[in-house]
Image (cartoon, rainbow, N blue to C red; front, side, top):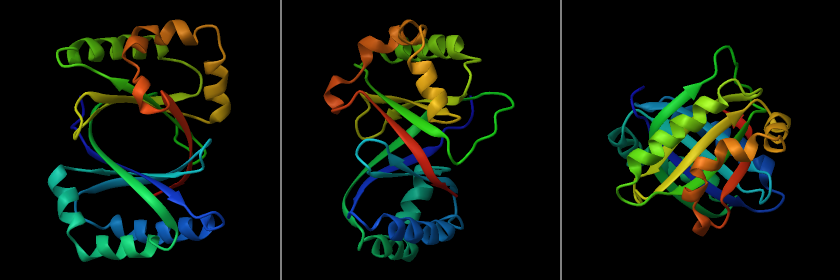
Length: 208
């Protein structure tokens, strides 16, 4: 298993008509964040349904992110985005597993699918085993680049499966296929029905 990364996910609602200006401001700030000690990478995605933006940044450790949060650069970045955002919600998490499909190159038009799970205390090992079972069955699925099992830090019972697909067409083809429901059935009892939406589909708009 690869070393666990500290992942920060931020959902932001943007003022209508300000999307392009927001993206440009984010790209400018992301270039500076890339030089911050401990930053591993960043992505900007946009939800297909609600149009909200999602920033995902990976850090070598919780301490590295905390140091950046206290830096003048972080405050400057927040100020640069403030004119465009109407609200924001941040979630921090630690990656547990990551699986990459061999020979698959990532593209900026790739799609991320986030499946929300709720795992009661004592069920962690069972869910991890089921995750591996499902991942083994999905191995070789056309268009599937990788997937990860995530656990919330602030709310340890809130888990998620994050999968990356070559594009929206590849995901939809699998989703509408005959094997979709049967393959993912083992994790279905753990789907978080309180999350508002059990899963979300997001297209990558920018990556740094």
